Length: 242
Image (tube, rainbow, N blue to C red; front, side, top):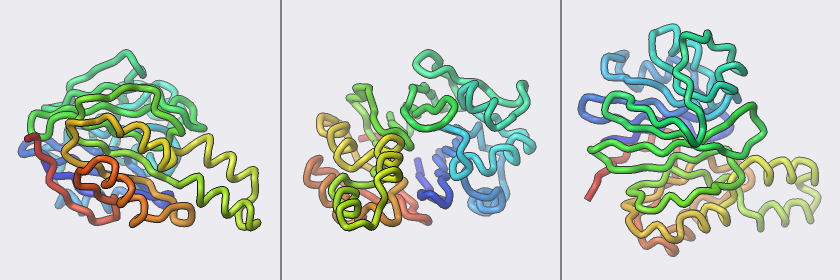
């Protein structure tokens, strides 16, 4: 299984999970041209696109993909917020629905973000094992033990936020919005600390101004003892199940 990062920031989020005969798009927050180019303009093996919520940096190309016949998997609230035609999207109900998408098995869980009905996903494929995909949520209230891979947000650190507020570089209202809508490094560390079966951790959606990529990577490596990657645009990574 190959993970390809097309974008992982407030400018746009999109990831490709590419197995031998199955491709799953995670988020559609980049322009459709970028997705087409990344796939070599070949959508024959694309089984669907998961969208966590309606904000443009996660859904920009959702309508374009729908118009191309690619199933969009999201919650009812996200579908309505995006104004996707009812018949077009495959609705996933958080904490209830598990669906098979080609060779992928996907379960949706509620997340905590300032959107209509956001969710996170647990994804399984025999070529990579299990992966949790969690972004744009200030907490993960689930015990995802036994995972092989974590694709997890580490948007900011509380220390950076507090220092910037103290120095007058960040107003309190915006700081509170960040804290109540995105996952901090500290909460990401709490979430993965007991994940003993991990093969690797991929940190996603780091803030341009409230994170430190090398420091975050080092902290997660120190905790897990596993390979850790920062999902910079262009990252291509093999995901294996040992």
